[in-house]
Length: 238
Image (cartoon, rainbow, N blue to C red; front, side, top):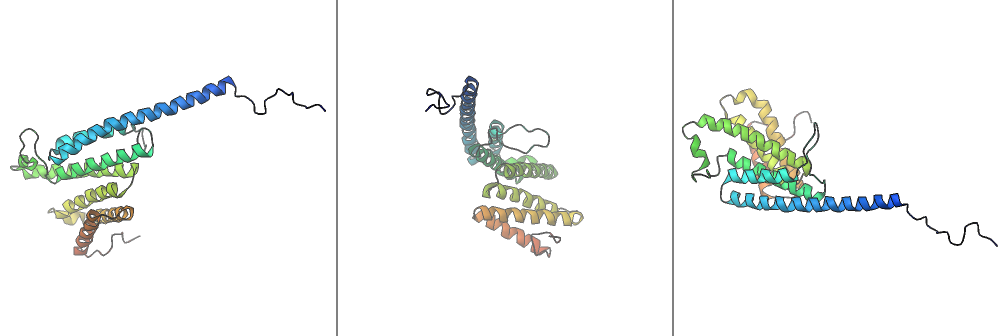
């Protein structure tokens, strides 16, 4: 009896030299990407630790700069209409990028509240506006807007209890500022909508992980809305 296949033929066809080279290149590419991510994470962690040290010593300006440096290391530059993400897209890098964005948002919120010191003199940061409080109001509006943008980016990268809490805090303080001015009646509906949105951020944060900070902020939102005869954190048309 004769076999149709020669006895020396392989049961499994051997890969061609071209496919072997492609597989080797794919493996090298994967190793290069992993090595690149590990290098970025190490550099980012060094800046993050420096930022946290500055934050604890109330040097918020330096802390903000170092948190911004961590973001620059980890974030993929965006094209038009692109959503923020890390350079690798891997969960570990995504989470670290989101955490650094959330920390930077908190740092900016603290500066918007007049916290921190001037790094050259050690004087309270807010003292520089003592003679011109209207300048501080302008500064605060700008920083609250920036904090909201940074926190929103953090949520788009990785939404968790911390990023959602920071976004809620930014929007809550924006609503409080708009609602406290002499022309607040002009922005009543807008202010209520922003505060309701802040409340929804706190609810999402609590669903991700229950924290005292989010619970306390949500109680404050409900109390603020109640003073204006609003009983829900959802718009009337929902």
